[in-house]
Image: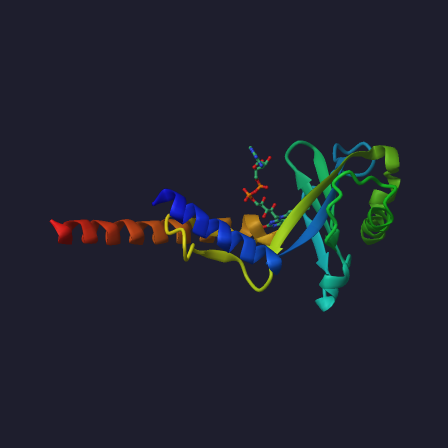
Length: 183
Ligand SMILES: Cc1cc2nc3c(=O)[nH]c(=O)nc-3n(C[C@H](O)[C@H](O)[C@H](O)COP(=O)(O)OP(=O)(O)OC[C@H]3O[C@@H](n4cnc5c(N)ncnc54)[C@H](O)[C@@H]3O)c2cc1C
C-alpha cells in the first residue's frame, strides 16, 4: 500500500517537473549600522515602490530602508528572476545600482561607503506561477501543500497557517465521522 502511494507520488513529481511550476526571484538586503555615527539615527521605515509589470524582466524600481532593533539598517531591494547565485557582492552591477539608488532616495546615506556595508544578504523568493499552492495533494492524501509565497511569505504566513489548521481540522473531523459510521 505504502509503496504504491509512493510510486504514484513519484510519477506525479516527474510529471510536474516537465513544466516547472516555479519561478525563483532572488532578493538582496544590505546591512549597515544605524547607531547615529554616520548620519542621524533612523527610527522609521521608508519605502517607495515603482514596480510595474516589468517584474519578469528584473525590475529594480523599488527602495526600502528598514531600521532593525539591533542598531542596523536593512537596505533593499532587488528582485531578479532566475538568479540563483547567493554569493553576490557590491561588485555585482545590479547591487551597485541598488546601493546608488538607495542613496539617491535618502541622501544622508551618501556618507556610507562600501566598507560600511557589513553584510550583503542574498535570499531566494520561490514563487509559483499563478498563485500559491495551499491544498491537499490529489494523490498523496496525507500531504498538504503550502508553498510558492514568493516575496510575501511573512505577510501571508498568518492567513496560510490559519487555512492549514482549518483544512487539517476539517480532515480530522471527516475521518472521525467515517470512523464512527463504520462502528
Ligand atoms: C530579500 C527578501 C526580502 C523579502 N521580503 C519580504 C517581505 O517584505 N514581506 C514578506 O512577506 N516576505 C518577504 N520575503 C519572503 C519571506 O522571507 C519568505 O517567504 C519566508 O521567509 C518563507 O518562510 P519559510 O519559513 O517558509 O522559509 P524560510 O524562512 O526560508 O525558512 C526555512 C528554514 O529551513 C532551513 N532549512 C532549509 N533546508 C533545511 C534542511 N534540509 N534541514 C534543516 N533546515 C533546513 C533554512 O535554513 C531556513 O532557516 C522576502 C524574501 C527575501 C529573500
